[in-house]
Length: 86
Image (cartoon, rainbow, N blue to C red):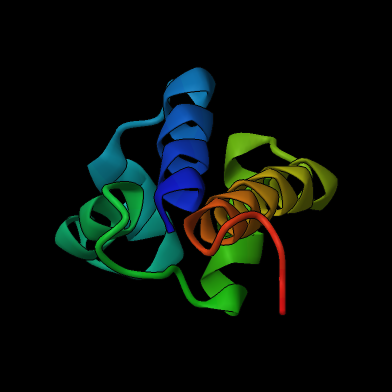
């Protein structure tokens, strides 16, 4: 979830939108959006699509960020078990 949170925070900051303003537009609390940006909660899909639209980020960019995070997690997990599956 860490990479997602990093993507969300960076995208909002890049767009120059205040957390409270974006949260109001999305219909969620600023506290919840903050938790999502810190990786403590997941933004529901229907809010995620609106989020991406509001900050001018593409779904493709989001998917790339999530794939990168997944790949890092898999490599880390494999390294933890000796780098291979039995």
